Image (cartoon, rainbow, N blue to C red; front, side, top):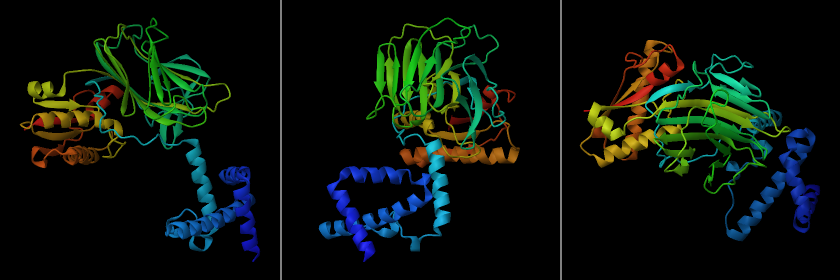
Amino acid sequence: MKNLKFLTLVIVFFIVNPSIYAQIRVNLKNKVENEANRRVNKKVDDAVNNTLDDVEGAIFGKKKDKKNSSNTSESESSPESVNNTEADEKIEQESQLPQKPVVIWSKFDFVPGDKIIFEDAPSANEENGEFPSRWDLKSGVAEIVNVNGENVISFLAPSTEIVPYFKNPEQDYLPDIFTIEMDIFFGSGYSNRFYIYLNDRKNQNFVDYLTIYVNNISIGEYEASYPDAERSNYDEIGGWRHISIAYTKGKLKVYMDDVRLINIPHYDKNPLGLTVEGEMSSDSEPNKFLKNVRIAEGGVKYYDRAMQDGKIIITGIRFDVGKATLKPESMGPINEIFNVMQKNPEINFSVEGHTDSDGDDETNQTLSEERAKTVMNKLIDMGIDKSRLKSSGFGESKPIASNDSAEGKANNRRVEFVKF
C-alpha cells in the first residue's frame, strides 16, 4: 500500500511539474556517482516505466515485453552488486572513447593510390608515453597512448603539429597524383578541430590547409558538412572519423567517412607535403587522437590496369589486424571493382590475398586465403555471379616490396584481382 501511494505521488509530480521530471532524469543519468541514490532511483525508474507500459497497453491495446526491456526486475537478473559493477565499468569505458557514428559505405568512391610512400598505424611496438617514431614535431606535445587495445597518437597540448619523418623533408614528396588517409578522433568542446596542411610546416613553404570539425570540412572558400549533422561538437563527443584526400593533377576531393564533402575541379595550388595539427581549448580533455595515416602515389584506372597488366593490385582493401574482417573504408576499391565487373561482363577475376612477413608462414597463408574469400563473397553479395569469381591466398610468399620498412610491408599487404 505504501509503495502504491509513493508511486502515485511520483506520477503526479511528473504530470504537474515537468522540471522535476527533468531533474530526476539528470539524477538518473549521473546515478553512478552515488550508489545509494542510484538504487533508489532505479526502483523509481522501474516502477514508473512499468506503470507507463500498463497505461500504454490500456490505451493502444499492446504491452512491451518486459523480458526484452532495459527495466528487468531484480528477481530476473543476477545479483545487483555484480550487475552494478559491470554496468558502471561499461559506462565509464564508453564515456572515455565512444565509437564513431554508423555510416553506410555502399556509394563510397574513394580509391587509394597504388604505391604507399608513407604509412603509420602506429605499430604495437611503439612505447607508450614516447613520441611517435615515424613523425617529427613542429610544435606542442604528442605521445603514443594505448586506447581500447591499440596504439594511437595523442595530441596533448592546445596546439600540436606533427609532420611525417622523411630523410629530405624540404623536398616535394607528394606526386602529381596522390591520396592521403587518416583516422582522427574528436572529443568534446567547440574549439576542438584538426588542421591538415598540404605542406610540411617545419621544412616547406606554406601551401594551403583543410579545417576538419567533427562533421565539417573546409578549405579556402569551399566548405561542406556531413549530411544531417551539425558542423561542430560543442556538447557531444564525435568519435572516430576517416578522412580521405585525393589529388589528381589539379583536382582535389576530400571525404569524411563515406561522403565526399569537397570537390574542387581546378585546384591551382601545388601540394608539397603533410602536417597534421590537433587544436583544442586549454580547458579541454586531451582526447584528440590520430592513427592509420597513409600517403600513396596514385595510378591508372582499374579497367585500364586489368586490360594492360591482366591484373589489378590493390593495397586499399584493409582488414582488422590478424583477421579477415573488412574495414569500412575498403568499400571504395571494392565498389570500383564491382563497377568494372558490372560494366564489363566478359571480365572474370581470381581474388588473391597476400600478407607481409610479420607472423609465421602457416598463419599468413591461412589469413591470406580467408581475406581473399571475404572479398570474393562481398562481391557476390553485391550481385556479381559467383561463376565469375574464385579466390586463393599466397601468404607472404610473393612480396612486391621489401619487408624492412612500414611502407614496404603495407605494399605487400594487398589483394590482387587477376583476370581468368
